[in-house]
Length: 590
Ligand code: AMP
Image 1 (cartoon, helix red, strand yellow):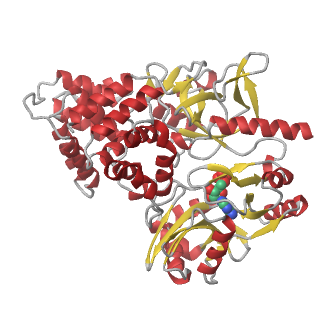
Image 2 (cartoon, helix red, strand yellow):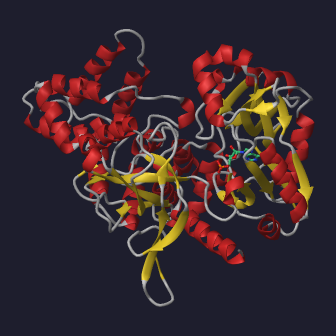
Image 3 (cartoon, protein in one colour):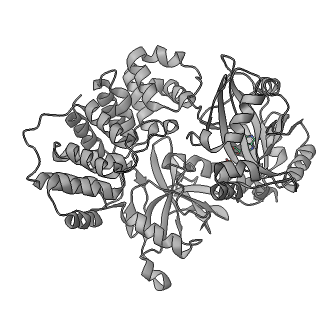
């Protein structure tokens, strides 16, 4: 496949607004790709070089791209910067500059997509002194041989912003079309993705082995499983009712999730967002080698620092800060990490996902010998709301976050938020205090004391996974420090979209629209119905249309933008609707 063909498909995709049309066109493009091309083509469409756990990052900043573009086109650097400030899109800048460039080699032969991808991998892999210059030279070499449309997408690629307006769920549906001609195999493709976290690999299996290959896929060592997520309910009796009268209740540790893969002495660890964290946690790696009896295993737990002297758990923020401060080795000595293991997904060659929780838990217990670093999460099995409540209270007293209740007979539900796990945190009772992750879709200019920041607040959205779009849920104007305001206005001004991005639903108009690329975490007092917002939009009995909105939202966290979350990880519109009905039920109960 030629890179020109890929760029032309991208251009058409960018212009489409109907999701069904996008799925069909994406399916057509993926069908056209050769068996060896589909994997990198999916990565490029996702705006990445490889799945997250392979840690292959571009390492190309905007400035590097600007330099490369100047070199390839003979244009002044200042002119490029000016155009970038105006458009907020280095892709458009590259397109228009290459159109005018006299240096562009019109006679150059067309480039294969695989060659372009291979060059990008090579550029990303170069490191060390002088690598910045060589990156600029290599990029400019590619740029100089591209047509303007190709240059547009090539420039957007290293910034992870192809701006096609589609996410993983649209790619999954397109793969179903490749596999079966229609969208009927969506669930099978999604399952395959959930057990390997590598959409490019799933595409390759579709191309080489068809839908049967997808169905044959099993959990594999060193391909992390997309984590199961917990639903939420506010009271012990709600939880027991939902679980059929009896369930396990585990302490909820506020650390960081850790998925462990072990094959003999080879161990790798993965974070919740599926990045490899092995090098950061040497004490846990050593404990896995020494104390996990099974030769091959995949299990997961929550890692957090534990102060032996005071018997206190350190909350997540503190654990991370200390790790930054003391470095990896120092941290292991000064503040040992503990891993509270809570689930088992693979054991000595056997995929355990379909086994009931009780079976997985008992196999996990027998797979780990007694030691100080890895212990099992502490838990009870109960059918009494009173007992559940007192276990919850004692967890809180011990400085933990709350509890996670688990359905005794449920399988491990990879990559989904289901009621087989239900969390209850201290603050649920009464009003919502669990944080909500929203996506920035616009911002307002500052007025009054904020005028000097050119930043007055955000317009935020939740994610509608079914339609792969972002739906407005709230304005956000409080909780920012001056530093955060400056950072946000600098960042967002570079991601402005001239009109409302096509994968955004909002009637509320911000001063500037922003491509839905950044996640922030907020805390709100309540969810209310709103005639203005599009989150969970539906018709009421009396025929009026309403959505949901957040009441008194404020920004939380030190870093304004969550670097560990992508827009597809944001709280979904469906979750907000569920939280609204829970909140209503609890307040009615008094
Ligand atoms: P939340 O991030 O609030 O949705 O809560 C779910 C997270 O709690 C999981 O992703 C885990 O990282 C963490 N967690 C802590 N303890 C447990 C436990 N015993 N079982 C499952 N998840 C736990």
